[in-house]
Length: 151
Image 1: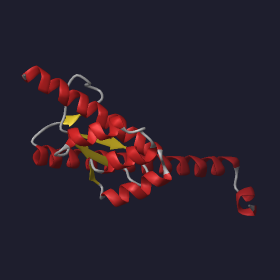
Image 2: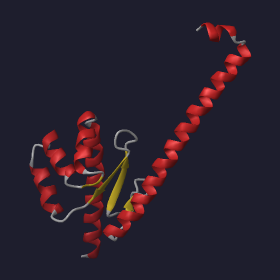
Image 3: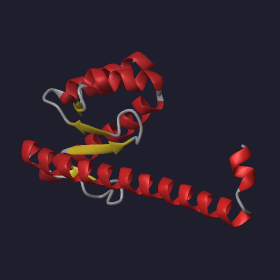
Image 4: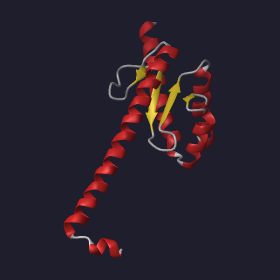
C-alpha cells in the first residue's frame, strides 16, 4: 500500500486504466475463443447430422442440433436429437418431470462435451438442465412441425 501512496494520482489513474484495459482484452479474447469454438462445432455437427443448427434468433427454422452457451465450466453444449427420441420424449412426458427425469432425458442428447463432464458441471449449476431441456423441447417441437408439414 505504501508504494501506491507514493505514486501521484495521475500514475495511479494510469495503472487503473491499464488494468481495466487488460481485463477488457482478456474478456474479448475469451469471447472470440468461444465464438470460434461455436463455429467449429456448428460445422462439425452440420456434417455429422446432415442438418442445420437451431438458432433461437430464427425460431421458425428448425434444426438438427442446438448449441447452448453457458460460458463457464462447460462453455458450449451441443444437443442433438437421437434415435428413439420419441420414446424418450414420451417417457419424460409421462413422468412427474422431476430433476432425475430431466437429467436422464437431457444427458442422452448431449453430444458435446463428454456427457460425464456435462453432468459434473450441471450438478454444480442445476439451471443447465432446465436450459438444455428448453432447447430440446424446441428442437422436438420444430421436428414435429416439419414432419406434419411433410405428411
